[in-house]
Amino acid sequence: MNDLPLRYALIGAGGIAQAHLQTIAALPGVTVVGIADPADPRTWRLSGPHAGAPRFTDAEVMLRETKPDLVSVCTPNKFHHPFTLLALAHGAHVACEKPMAMTVAEAEAMEAARARAGKLGSINFTYRNVAAFRFARELIAGGELGRLLRVNVVYLQSFLGAPATPHSWRNDVALAGFGALGDLGVHMIDGVHFLTGLAYRRVVGLAQTLIPEKPDAAGTPRPVTTDTNAAWLAELDGGVIGTFETTQIAPGYGNFFRIELSGEHGTLALHSDHPEEIWLRAGATLTRYATWKTDLPLQKLPTEFAGRGAPTTPAAIVHAIRGAKVDFPTFADGLRAQRVVGAILSSMQTGAWAPVA
Image (tube, rainbow, N blue to C red; front, side, top):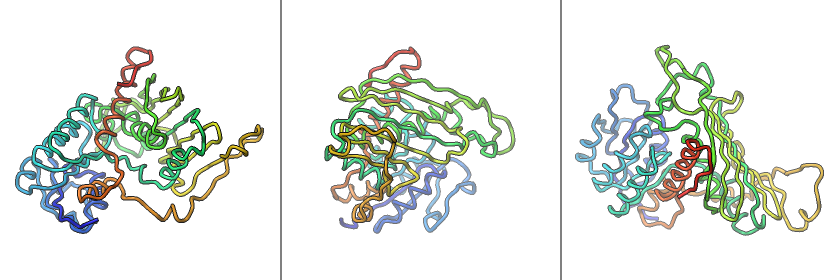
């Protein structure tokens, strides 16, 4: 890969912007030319060697004056769509946070604009970086589980239920669009597709808001208008049934993302707290016999595989811009996940299964 110089800018100076800076701006040849956020720059939560980049309160002014090659969109979800279109109109590639948009129509417009502009677009599906996820994908693609039969996914957090955590934009449906369903659910949806390659055919789901209000940073009670809990069933290619549950209010859970899959010749499980390990019982001979005592051995990944690494999101797009053949989550992947979320929301309105377009 070459080190083609790239001018890089960010729209949004919240906490996730720091992760973009740490991965993208750390690459050779990348120069941070501007950061834009309408909030008072003195309140921005940025640190490190790139936090002193030129600061703007108007994104369009920044884009016009700095002419970046790549822009990270790190705003609340409501603004992903307009700022992505703006960055593309100014000739930049875009690394956008997840979920891609507030609606399927917005996500479709973002992908269409990207294609017209001839630029690259990525969505920050970070679990594609995790070694255990990539190794499980290789096992499944190699047919070592045989024909897939079932999928079970949980993504459990506790932060929203904690009294010490103040109300934020993530609790406001007007800014976030969704709660657990959008914030965590898109990782679940993309994770299963990444591992298996299976498409979603139809879904049925429900969501709840189990904490009606939270105090903001000043102590003023504010309503929680996003979902705190969601669950859905999905039918995937080949009739594979997937069960999904997510919550932001389960005490004791930090960032617990677990996927379990069974095929004709094995079962594997992986989760976020064990990035270089998987639970695996597989093989035609081993699984030929019935098992009456559950035993999914925890196994370390092969050292060579674990050490191989992969370009991390969101920085993988830089490698692609520079001409490297690299697998990264694209706008098409973001749109795919958005369509599943849209179908879940549709099913919640009707109480019936909804097809995934």
